Length: 439
Figure (cartoon, rainbow, N blue to C red):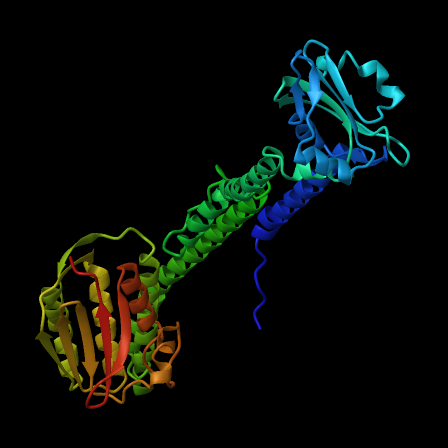
């Protein structure tokens, strides 16, 4: 059961957004609570009475202010039996209705200097709660001081319906929703760039390091640690490569001397050791071939049909001497770019591998997309067709071969951006197909 990889989106985007939205939500209600001044107590006079009163203010024939009992004012009076108000024009002339509290006597004559106020009484029945508004009336501009319907929701409703407060909070929420993910993505863009660089590192691209230039400071120690690990791996690989190359070179001389001594021996038992000595020689050469894969390639344009004919001609005498045959069939004439020596070793190894595994007749076909080698041996079981490319893996113990031939083939083909695969032949045996990109 695979565990889900944790994502940075939750701690860097989702959680900050939730925190911001919660902050905005709480801040909104704190502002509303402050606007209501919940600690002061008392009810408000509904400010909607001011325009109703103003529409009832007219002038008489002498130009003085007068009250006309409009249907709205009549209704308001029936709803608020303790209704009282004073209306005053800009010249200080006023008209009153109802019992104006004595506490507001000093306001009369000075109301026209005011434009807005909300006055609250601290104790029931809140007769001193009043509102001051400057309104348009039939008599012109008037300032109304009045007491009527009481409510505790006037400012709440005003805040909730305010044309500025709600859009501002919505705008802040929208900005948080858009800007926060953008900032986070921009901040971790360097991490994505490093991930792409890491994907390009493999055995063919040693020596590369991850860039630290655009990486966040918190991620930089991890990148430096990875670069140090890559450096140590490169150094270890290089030491191993030099050791294999040196060992293979050093083995050549004693193997050559041993071959001469075996071939010159008079005893038949010693001469029979020749096949084992040849196997050691092949192993040393193939180790050197693996080492050469890491050195500079001499790429050139290769006529694949000509190369196959040349290799087949070189191998033909050895095959004929061992009662085997080889046939070349050209079904396409592709040209490729690559190391001709390496491609020759691939073909040679495939032909030798076919012979070593019981093939009596080998067919090399030149295809449009590469070439393939077919033999009439016992074939390779489907479950083993991937494993035979592993170093030193064998289908069964044999006195010949090194177990590195197909490994070398696969590595050379992959370094030429190609692909090698194994199929069963129609009449038995195996087909090893090498596909290479054509020019």
